[in-house]
Image (cartoon, rainbow, N blue to C red; front, side, top):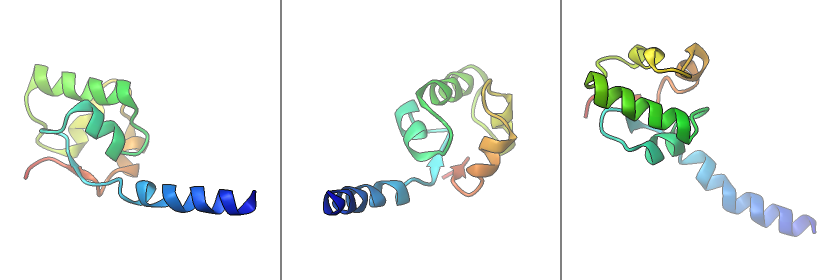
Length: 85
């Protein structure tokens, strides 16, 4: 049983490590929710909807205008939020 746990943990570890940089101006909701910590599908869709209604983000801090995105989420993803290519 312990070996099974070790194998499963080993298989999941790369998935957890690979989360990272995402351009919030071009990514779809699925990609945003997968790549950013603390952002599920609903918040990711809110980011996409906000972007479509208001235009591209010009700074990561503008994500704070999206309902459900707070300073903690922004801080947790500071190095992974990309605004431009």
